[in-house]
Length: 307
Image (cartoon, rainbow, N blue to C red; front, side, top):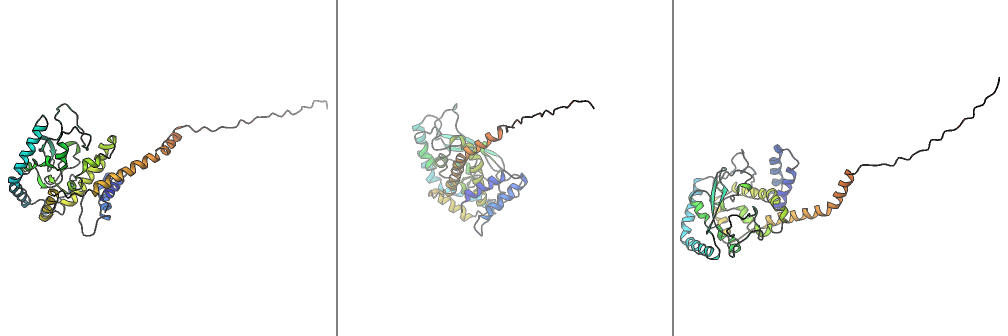
């Protein structure tokens, strides 16, 4: 199933419909391309919508599972955390950790904890959407991002109750398009699909990147996470965590989105001369040459005489 193309088609249809019809039509479009026996919803993160989480996703057992997994893994994770922290400190000036506000459950924000991967410059302006080449990374920054080691400190966000091990990734305030009904996750369905996001987005032109990310990537991520959280179970969470640790990524959705965007962009570029010509023709006044007809006055001789 080409999920990316289906999501893109739903977005294009939404732009021409009243807001009251958009979500229902998007549901039908995705349902028409969904394999039999699966359940989907766009309502998980829609404001004012009914709850569409699986019983596991909203259970206290999931919270116990998160904490138990983190505590059990701490003896293995602490040496890795110390090694990465020392590497960050030794290779660049600045703090070891990167702190940033993110949107959490039910609209409550929290401070996410990550290892710093970019050059520390308080006055520098950074891009809101990160690609492989548009940020001033440190010497080990790309390595940490490629292996997801910069995300390891988020286990402390899990222990504090800000995050879960599995859930939608928390977004920056400018990228929050809806409220979450569950805790954001360290990994999730969209994380698996967009694990190579920075490399993939590098193929999108910079002037189109922010718009493309907001109108295509964010809604696609929301859809994938909503689909997963509506049917999540203990075993599915465990499988997703194992796939994340073993780096079993599935980039088919992200690749299809970028390829579809590239196709549409090339199509628009091919049609641009014709569209411009039509626009110029529509703006130019219609001038018709009206032939000037000569008016010939026939002189009728006047007879004069006597009766």
